[in-house]
Length: 177
Image (cartoon, rainbow, N blue to C red; front, side, top):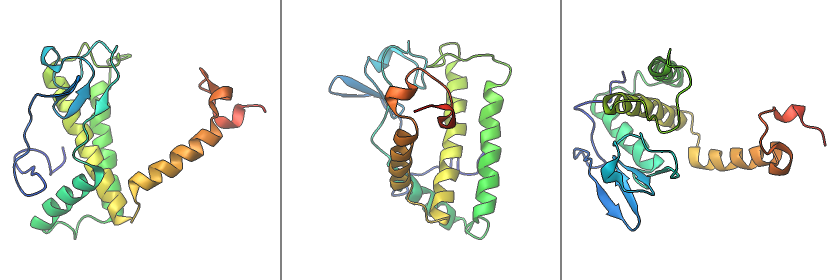
């Protein structure tokens, strides 16, 4: 488990993060996630029917997360330990913790309908650890993740044109013109 989870988690200005259920037009925010259906009748971390399209909440942004983690690290004088190699290895460890949650379960349905709320929350914490390390690694390597994602998505569109790959899981090198 990452050192940044738990009681020490802080918001952008040092305030404690809050979890609330609020309405946003026809969408609902639950634990920061937006779903098209009413969130009040659903568990906070997934567990929906899968019929609605999941959407992340608009905040915090990746830059907000970077700043929160930078503040957290600075307050503890941990930058001396947070070099790219160490962050990468820590992130891989966290990915292993996510893997453990899925191990021996067989196929897991979208929305995790068979998971308890406690299991979903544990997954949310471990995925958060992975994201925090990823964002900090990108920062230390000077990779602007949002811009890198845009470039990578454009490249993927070229490699995997929808009219050639629709419904297929083949690698781009297997497609014929």
